[in-house]
Image (tube, rainbow, N blue to C red):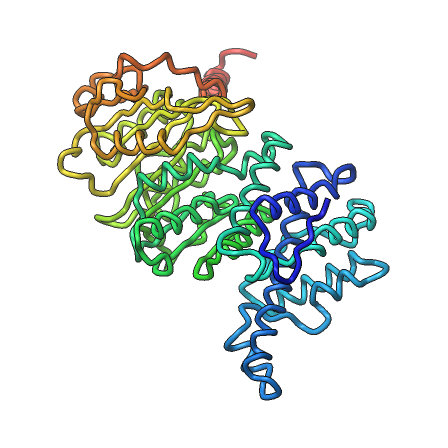
Length: 506
């Protein structure tokens, strides 16, 4: 059911969320739930742009009357240009071939606003086999009944509703949607630990829908700083998801940001004169244990990201970690990344990279083990790894281990962390003191010599004996196993060729 909003009525958050979910329901049947986002978000964004334009046009007319010119309006009032014939009403009033009209309209809006290029994604709205016109009309009708201008949608309501839809899509479609959505409580904790400051340059090299970047804005606001001084950057390989990230940031009221599309490993997009750009904060929840990530090119990586070695070809976890560390600024640089527990203990190439990061570089400041079943895409427990280019003096040559596996609120499908859980975990990290299991937390600051004695194994259970047995990271363990098998087969082929060359065998 669509909830209408009158000219003098501000929508409540619940009304807005109900309306947006009704838009998704209009697509049920012909569209897979995992693809809802590709259709709902561009239409919502188009409605917001059009309603916002109407709002500011009325303000301009009220203040200038007959003296108003297009130049004055576009320069002083309008955040975006909408060409003639490309307003919401022009599309909604179209009787036949609505998809063709919508395609043309969105293309013209992008052409008139270079900063919006790619923001609407790549849906072919005219493809009636993929999206029947009846479903498209129903989708448009759902949004037609609401006003998304500043008078009717206050503050950050649109941004919050946007995150509501991301969450609902993840729940509806499971792993497929979960790949681009990090639970907000995890994002909030990681950003709180990294403590972004006014003026910081921040990047997410696997930005997904942009939630990490949005949270840095919220963090600076809450601490009394001016978020407009932040410089936000993100890279995302998926076209639809990169478009979603742009929409998300715009809908949260942000303008000074850069989202670029491309493969972070083969085509890092934040490069100046052949060198990687450096950032104060580097934050990400990248795809876990990514296979076929491009290891062959990293042995001669022009950006020097394999400074501790080339990760296994079938597991890109340490490629993400090394890329992020390589983009830290001197002195101020800090990295926060979500990783599976397998990165803490897997051997082979990863073991050597881990040794280098610890012994040679001393970049790793903290390992924070989170509760299991927090994510839509996996039920395994994860850890936050915190790196700093320059660690505090009292943590140099040491690593802080925090077991926060008991700090969660049980849920039907996924567990979550409350504000109290987040505050407790952050306080444990910030203090770095052993609080003897108070409030379900255990932690210990460990000397590098002890870690070396354990073969640079970072499994939390080695250093905090009260920790519950860590669940095996099955996916990561299998990736390491298959990588080792591949190396064994390669060695066997080389041996076989040498034996044949020496006259042995058939």
